[in-house]
Length: 147
Image 1 (cartoon, one colour):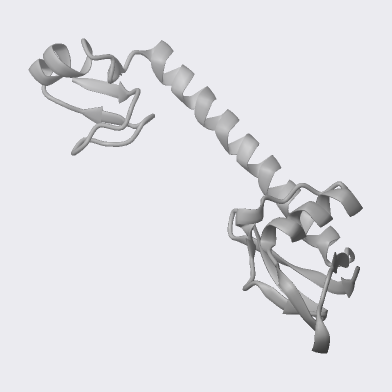
Image 2: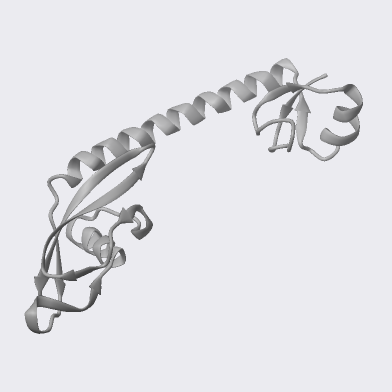
């Protein structure tokens, strides 16, 4: 019997896949637990429409990430910090502070977990890598200045 999985089933397949299983397994386990639906023409059409909508959404998100990566090249971020003697900062500038500065200065909301940098402990200019999803990354120029 052909069924379309509604959830991931260990050893069988992922959500949205159409698989061939024995009649008893489908009737006694998959269908009662709502893990799958029979592969009727209506269900196959619904599955195809959902897959198409998912591909379109991913394409839009990928395009948005590419546009954001292009914008980030022209967005230097200025972070103000207090320092002691010799230009060493009290504490450090973290990805959380860089994310907040991006949001305040440019309205660009990049989560701190997407930014990859070691804590910055001195004044100067730094390059911070930002992972934007869909294997797209950009470099953010960060300038640490005295408060």
